[in-house]
Length: 408
Image (cartoon, rainbow, N blue to C red; front, side, top):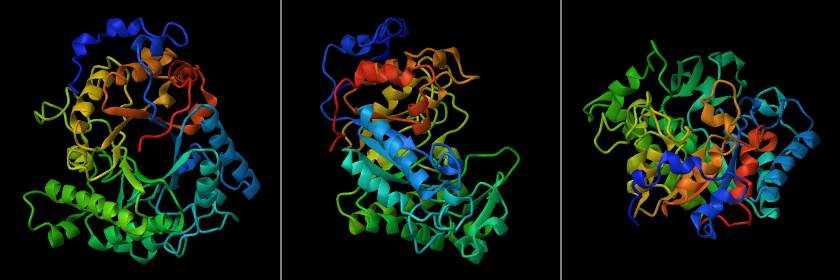
């Protein structure tokens, strides 16, 4: 399974593909895999995708949720990645953390039903897999502890919390924090037959110019065996991933564990093992997440790098990054799926490529030439539903003419 030379698949060739529905798939001259990931993220933070606003009745919330599941089924997708812990809260009755404010408008107030339990049951009834998506360390999208529910663990353990960039985070450098967030997340895994546990790209927060993530006290206490603060921070995240993987296997054997990181591990200018990119953020250095090692060591079952750039984008070319991630995943046993920026299709301010409804279809055509790529996940459900320029409809017409099961 050698890597495809990018010279053999030029932008000029890509521009001729998918000029009519079905053309992209036909250009491959081979059927799509019988099993492939066809996923969609269903985001709840800030009510991005669901529910449409806080405070809806339980019946209205349920109707909206089922509408998203029905749409995924009709589009011949097979997996919904449902955000159930957007900010140190819960979309199920948790003994550890309060009900999410995105449900009722008031953190800690019961919505009168069980969104995660319903999502698992109804997804499975439609032949969909349900991955439970957790954000490990984000506490709030503001910095006011007083706005959190009175029972919130962050109010009881203020030493666990770091304000940064206008938000609140749990400190990943504290072992008691790492243990707590795992207990909180594994509660859902124990209670519900979710098909996978999913983390996104938020580990240490994205850098904010002029601000410092204040973990001095934790570093002084626990960082003595490391050559640098960055190495200690990476070890903290490595420990979270390893321990979570072990916890999932113990609580519900057979449940998969996947991560969707920012799409650039490191630029080649920084590390010869890195990608031919010039991205301003590098996951290894800025978020302290060594995602390449997690794949190479098969610490996780799957990875969904967020390749949220168009083909030919100078700083981070989608085609070059698919090449790079395919080479990283080859021979590891870790499944590689590609995260797709459906939300950029037709969006104001995006490069011209994103105003071409065929751009995303070209992504799938290109990725299909790499046997290591086992499918795609689209961000996000609201955009699947709206499909403003028909980019998702084009993907379905060109690539999803028949149903497919997810990879085993």
